[in-house]
Amino acid sequence: MEEEFIEQINHYQGILQKICNIYFYKHPYREDYYQEILIRLWKAYPMFKQESAFSTWLYRVALNAAIDLVRKECIQPIHKELSAREYLIHDIHSEDNSMTDRKEQLYQAINQLDNIEKATIILYLEGYEYKEISILIGISETNVGVKINRIKKQLIKRIKDGRK
Image (cartoon, rainbow, N blue to C red; front, side):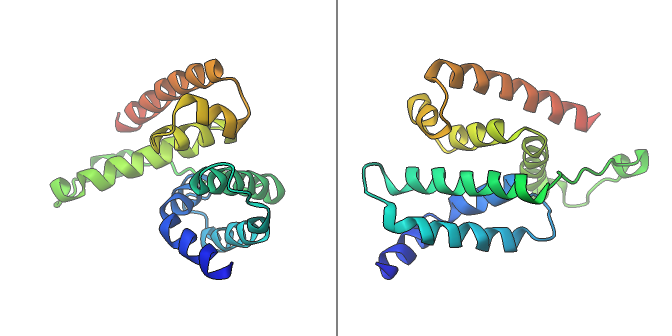
């Protein structure tokens, strides 16, 4: 059982990293929370009945653990307003860093969403269908579509506002 669990976690550790990046973005205890989520997954693993894909189960447990940690620890997103001077600094390697910068902007924008919105957009970006998202999040399939459209608009606005 232990070997199966480790193999599955190794295979899907990208999912855990994304969840930690979204919920604990630049938090000093990010790695500790990652470990806490792993512990909760291990404790819940004996109850995994293989009625769904392992990745679906992993998302559900990890997202619930992350949300629970945020609530218990009262973790607040870390926002840093840049000065006008910092906005004007030109990166010498801007072409090399453009993808990293866009990813960073996306993480910052997602970090400002509420917990349900974060979970919804993570699953959407991972390619889950509305029906799967609705089951994982616990909202109707129609509501998932509405939420995703609203979240996209919020993210676009926040990213554009960040570039001004």
